[in-house]
Length: 296
Image (cartoon, rainbow, N blue to C red; front, side, top):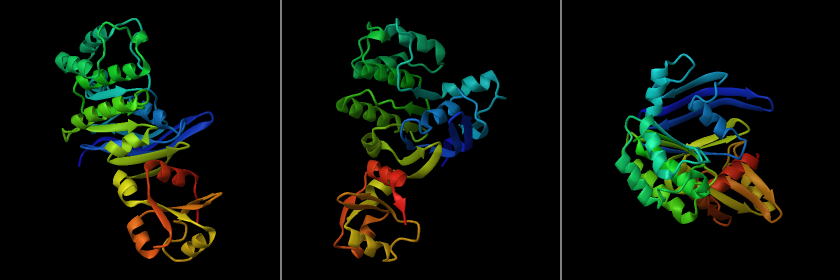
């Protein structure tokens, strides 16, 4: 499987923050959910991919082409023509109306499809005569998404693109992304705090915290296989001494009402510990235990 995006050992130093040895890959035909708290390094990573900041070390390849300061302007343009990008805020001129935003984009992208853009405007119910400054946050996100898709990119990079949308609008946007992914040559890197969206659409989940990758796993390994066991103190001690977990692999959180334990395979766990309460893991619970949990 070809990777549309390859990030290897990416590092960037700022006063008070370091992005350290980031490895992240977006295979063709897949959606990669990029999660982590505010300030964890998601946007810094995305800006490096887009050439908006220069990394201190490591490499970035998009469509097999290395992104660096030695690229010619024609190479840079060629790669960006094949990418669609949506940030967490609408970045078009405030006085421009929706219709003219489409005209502006038609001068920027050789593959711009005006008919497709109009179709997205109808789908998203975006008034063509409304100015950007008068759009709600959600409408601005829809306009940005319409522009990102209307030039027929191969790789979409979405930085909190669904954050301003209500639940129905988010489902509508996810349907649009699913349709985009019908082409197996396409891929999406999707940064989002709304993990329920990623549970519906992502193939892989990559978590970053404090500038480091904490985990990178298939989404199904979290939502279909992993679990969270809820133990009393005595049950926890028995579990810890059972040999089910290798030394250092048991990750847990203590609460006033008991102890939560991350279980990589809840089916195997249920066979061995029938009396311990067990739930399916969500991305949120998995991430919480990985980031905040103790190990034993």
